Image (cartoon, rainbow over all chains, first blue to last red; front, top):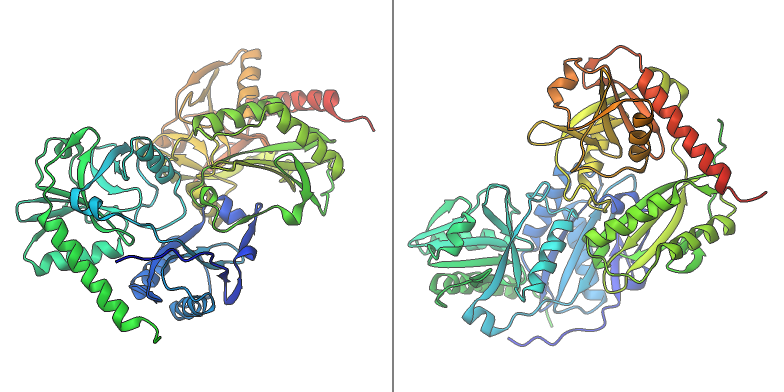
Length: 283
Length: 283
């Protein structure tokens, strides 16, 4: 699938209005931005459809509820503004950022960004990741408390790795800086059941794993077990990448065979395509 | 000392320019703001002087260095822009926010806010604080990773408390959400020696404590010991409040006698006044 980047985007949403992207600004003195009191989603736009929109909005509102961000928006409001923005800017392929900033005047922003691209060879041969020590605050909430993620991604980049796995003080590999993390051992699919972000792609991977008869073990792999080659496959997942095989953790490389990762990636991709067929606007 | 609030402020600084405060805005899509990759200071402006400016700039640059924020500014640049802003807006009393946002185009902002006010009765009778479980990421860096601080302050407000003490998973009271924390036991002044923000007021409190013959114990009080009444005095410190006595932690209240806190508060206040006399612009 070859997608031409769409540039430039010109529109954004602030609350219930379509505005120019240039006007989507915040005063430097905004207290809630200063304090990261804000939640967000990144939604894939394909063929003009916001993929798994309902899942993302449910999680956005759940994140806001957990932080007790008071606001008067409904999920239907945000869905409606998403449709209006996609139509106003003729957006067919993008990553749509949805951000809800708390405070006395809670503010919703929607704005499009370029979709990240991943090459076929990354899916075929696997990618490199690093292990990065650090624990997020309220990891189950998709909040803007993201400094650890930024530092972890920067460190990954310095090692020419795609992602950094966050390792707890207890030595557990719980999730990536912008992905969920999975290990495969025999017929078992292993991933933490709590203390991580409830990824939308993770949800469909777990559903798909059940369909092909894998046993799900909700636990976090130990970082030493990643190095030892104990697992048959490792992969990370996100909205933008689906299920991406991992062939290297720090300096340890593994055989490049990922039958289960590839199967799950294909199944999630098929669900995504079915969603797009059902929801893409008429041409 | 009675200070009339100065309203409205009209100017700000972006990099090496004086701009209108209205133009001190950031695009919602700014990656580094989104990820809290930013460091800051809050500097007290009294009689037109930026109190302990050198200490604040040294810490700002140390914070930036620890996060590896690349930039081309010198401390003299920031000091120069501080003077220009104070003159341009005729600022005599304010809290000056200095914020350095990292990234490919690092950006410095300076802008004035109202100084918080604390009543004489708070200093006389002490204030109430709560204990709040949570650990900051890189607590020694004054970064914009502040969600925990926001949630802790909000919880304090719900209990009509002035501050929330952050309690580690090991049960240690390390610092407040926007202050350092001290306990007095006999002739010992107790405060953590690491893992907390190197407060400028804390530095002058420690210097003053040495001058009056207190022994400094660099350790973190256990939260149970706060409740038990084991300590003779508890206090918090910050640029805006100096040394503020604590008369209540959660539901436990203590005798309202704070001779050492009051002495240290007066000594730091004297240092501040001496600084202002030396640095206030001629009238």
